[in-house]
Length: 175
Picture (spheres, helix red, strand yellow):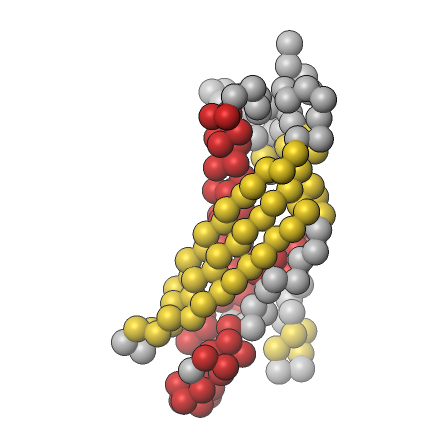
């Protein structure tokens, strides 16, 4: 991360992937999602989805001098590995998709909060504000770092599973 020509920090591979998703530049790849913890099961198992398409739209909303950004992420992909989920019924599939959506929303929000703590607009919200609300941008430009760090973000993710890519839609280790 570079601010005023100086490096201020680095992103992990996952955070860089999140920034690409949030700026609608992510093309395709594998998304790993941890299984829901059940009871005392301490094993940390991960399921994966092969992302085919992902479309992100962001919208800035101004309300009483406060900036709110709504981010809508629509993702479609194939299930490539199941470790703990069963997809025997439509309800199982819906539950799996909701788990992925919730995980992605939390994960993307963590990355957004990181950029806000560092006061670095990696998501291009300032450019969006300049395009949509030029007069306000001219007023806010001088203290944009502070305003960006205080902005409210709302992230919504919707997932569509197009294919399971597995011959049996059960976890690999299921008995």
